Length: 505
Image (cartoon, rainbow, N blue to C red; front, side):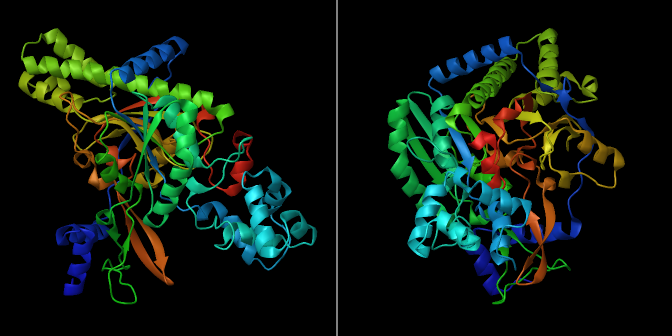
């Protein structure tokens, strides 16, 4: 099936022939659906700390940072913003010239409220010889939209979200990338330094670096810290081969194999290369202006405090197991910790012999740990927190996407519909073991949790293979804890008009 040219192509990507064949086999076999016990809720897998507990967690986080630990803020930022402007692209190509849909009307009626208004006005003046007001007055709405989207204008149709102007300030507008630098200074700085890592696409790398060079020193001076800002790209070795309907490899017009990015799950490789004790993970577009940052800062410190508190307890138990000198009561205490605090249950745990029980406890205590903020479900599309059965028969907390659920199982569909909480991608991760060694994160991926989707290329249908998602299957075998955080900490920007929401003004 593979020719010499194919073998050369995959070798250049760092993909083995075995890996490629495994991917093609997955198109044939598909992926199993997950077995669910219940949707997580407050009191059933989700904790909701009161004010006193929150302060204790914040204090624990401050103490942890004072110990000289390295903290990194990890921001997936490789996506282009083109989907944000889907409606405006449609308007430019429409067979009518004035705003007609509710979306188009909202955009133009509020155009002065966008943080990019002045920049757009300037490119309109330069390229059209008239500013926005004059173009609108003569009914030339499409010229305004085109100058926002096209390369000769602001090029917002092709730029990454991280480099768009999101928020207005007296001193000038800010991009999401800058808002993340500010956040890094406010909750992730330790030893006077904030480490921030962006994953970006290859074509946008130089633009990101230029913007950081332009802006970082100003924020460092403002917050009295130093920045260590690093970048990485999704690795070509994590791309997945595309297939035809009959599961044979899909080929480009020149006969080469078509590879596609493996989705955000590929970033587990990037995360694995970060040298840190604790890593915050948050999407590029979930940012707010300074006037609304207070909740974000407080709750980031809370979930980090939960993490380091639980991690310390797990480490203490592991050191105790290492001594070989522990009582039956201490083993019972460890079981309660794993079941209650780490929310990982094993139905037949009482049937295990003492030696097997210690092996089991060691395995569950000595693995990467993550605390995930979850918000009350407000109807946003995406994944949610569940109690699911794992490969080893245990039940633990996982974040699930709807694609992982068997739609023919009415009970599961109902669980997903009635889920009280939503995953806003608000994670803090502990990635070193109790001896200070980094975990090899790819070892904890559940490779059976990928999924297959339908796409097209040059008018031809194809099957695409998505790797297990970063906060789904890629972290499946981590200790997972869910904490309810307020909806005010979740403010994604999915369309350009989302920037008109009060939270972004």
